[in-house]
Image 1: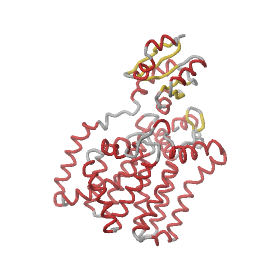
Image 2: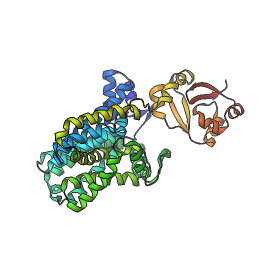
Image 3: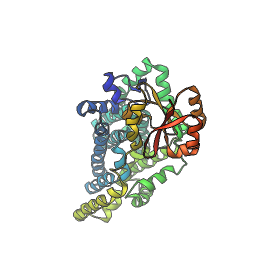
Image 4: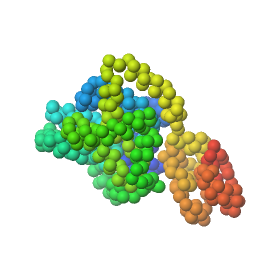
Length: 422
C-alpha cells in the first residue's frame, strides 16, 4: 500500500493492486511511504518503521521495569526482550504488529505513570489513539487491561479522573477522523473490510486457513520464545500466583497484561504466531524478575557477559537474520514480471502471498485454494499460476500439466510459474 502511495501520490486512498483497501488503518503505511520517499522503495525502507518501533519497545520495557520493580530488573527485562528470537524476527518484518506493540506498551507505561501525575494519563490516550490508527480494534485490548488492573488493585478512582477521560477523548480525536472519513466516503466497503472482517470474521472464524487449537500459543511460546522459554514457563504462572496472593499492584499490572491478552488471543479463532508480540514486554519483565534475584546487581558485569554469549550462540542457531519471509516470491519475481503482462493477474495456488507478489513483482494476484477453483479458472481462459512443488505433485505433477495443456515457465527453488501453452 505504501508503494501505491508513492506511485499515485494519494495519501488518503489506501490501495492494493489498484483496488481500494480498508483492512487496516494508515499510520504504519504512511510511515513506510515516508521512508520510501527518503530511501527509495526497497526492503530496508519497508522494514525500518517496524524495526524502530521494536527498538522503542525495548527501551520502553526498560523504563517500565525500572518504574514497576527496580532499575536492575528493568535493565534485564530489556535485554531479555532484545534477545528473544520471536520478537526480533517479527520486528524486522514490514508488518503492523511491532508498531502496535510499541504504542500499546507506551500507553500502558504512561497509564502507570498517570496514577501519580495526571498529565501522563493524557499521554496514554495519545498512544492509544496511535495504536488504533495502526491496527484498529486490536488496540482496544488496552482498555480491559487497565480496567481489570484498576479493579483488582483498588485503583478505580484513577478511571474517574478528568485527565483519564481527556486521554480517552484525545485517543478518539486521533483515531476517529480517518475512520469517519472512510466510513462516509466508502460506507459498505469500509464496513466490510475494516469492521466485519476484523471484528467478527477474524474472531469467530479461522480466516485464510490460520486455525489452531486452544494450546496453539503455548506451542508458539515453547517453539519460538527462545532462549527464555524455560524461565518464562516458571515465572509467568508465579506472577499470577503472586498477584492473587499478595495483591502487589506492580505484579497485578503485569499479570493482567500477560494473561488477559494471552487469553483473548487464545479464544480468537484466527491464529497467527505474531499476535503474541504485545504480550512479550510483560513476559520479559516476569523473566527478568526471576533473573534479577538470582543474579544481583553486583554481578552486573557477569550478566552483561552472559547476555553477550547468549546472543553470540543464539543468533546463528535461530537464523534470525537469515530468515526471509517471502524468499520464494522474491526469487521468482523477475520471471513473473517477464511472463505476466502488467495489469494482468497471476494466480497463487494454495499460497497466500499476495502482498509479496505486489511488492516484488508489481503484479496483481488471485488465490486458488482448491483443485476445483484451479479447474474453474482454467475454463475461463489462459492461466498463469505460481505453485509449490508439493502442491503440484499432489495434483498429479507432469501428468496434470500435460492433461491441461500447461507448461512450466520458470522455477525458483521449490516454486514454479506454470502457464497455459501458447
